[in-house]
Image (tube, rainbow, N blue to C red):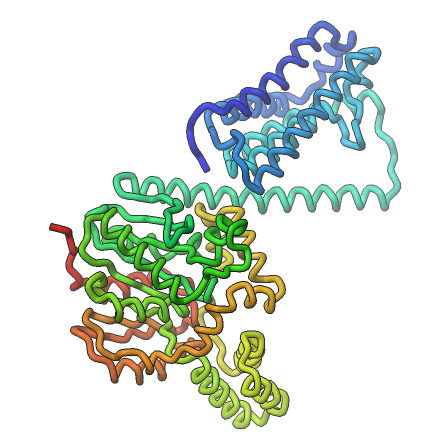
Length: 525
């Protein structure tokens, strides 16, 4: 996105565009000048301005060059439009060279000579995620297509259409305008986010890359204003619910004082897509392997940023991985932060159900279906039954401040097609999704932090939302009372549910900074 440099695709498009127009000079319609006199001056200005802007964008952004990804579909569609544009010119050159021929349609596309390049540039803009080209193309389209439609109207005359056809035409136009507008707004916000982050982190690090962990190329996103700052390694939840592409929402407020490394863990997100051919069933994605991968990631961060230790911050399932790692490797962890700390999912789901049942009885609600679902959960505490139970108790556990994960995703400058592919997989068949990471889900379901050591050799801090019933604050508070650590504290933010970092991103980041303020910058000697 917004990589400045020469675009050979853009140059090729300009050649395809310009050559036929040069040849047209020698065989333009005889009465063309008469029609040109009637062209709207505003449309002519927009056409010229659009031409200049489009040509500039095509040449100065290397984002339009060939790269192999699912976004290449947009490039292919763009190229098809340009080839149809050439075919349209061939048809014209073989015709009688009249204004009617010049304004002809192709495959149902009106004034194809004007419409096809506009469509090609639009597809190319989406391919390069470049709102500058899309905006320039819209200006060009209004002027260029508007002028040609005016010529077509003069040549063919105004045809009276059936009222139903006219309604459908206007509805179709309205839909296209709305879709285009939404795409432009989303792309614009993503581009603004990109530039603000680029400006924010000019002298630090802001890069997504693959590094080898446990024999796999695994994706990480590193962000920070100063490489000398302490390093936070953020562990996503799930398991396998990668959210690296939206961590900017809270890391924006941390990058002044910390370098934040987010990671798509083995078996999910971009890491899974990258290694799908070699490990399609996630046979290697076990909790034991996750600990080994994390240890290598910690070593990478220590060596890359010249530290003795790092801060581990985990969310939900990430607190299982993070807390176990912190207990096993105190020599590499200077602080641990549990965000919605998991104590025991089975016990907390029972606790959540009992609270919901009590509230339902108090309200006089029929509890038979809720009790039946709970019985199914007790008989078979599978992930699907857990999700079914949670969806039914949620009625009695409303969230005051909802998370903004969807908005952060669609406006994210870090969101890629592989992120979308994994997100859609999560929305698919739940049993297939769970089976793909069965080892991790089985471990998570059976995990009980009370069975782990309670002696931490580093400061430990916990942050939760007051409306979190996936990992209730009462159970976390009870656990914290029984642990020993050089320093410990539990912060509850009023209003959010389980995804606290995406509900109140700025407040969450500030609370985290306040907790970590006493952590020294650990530099290697």
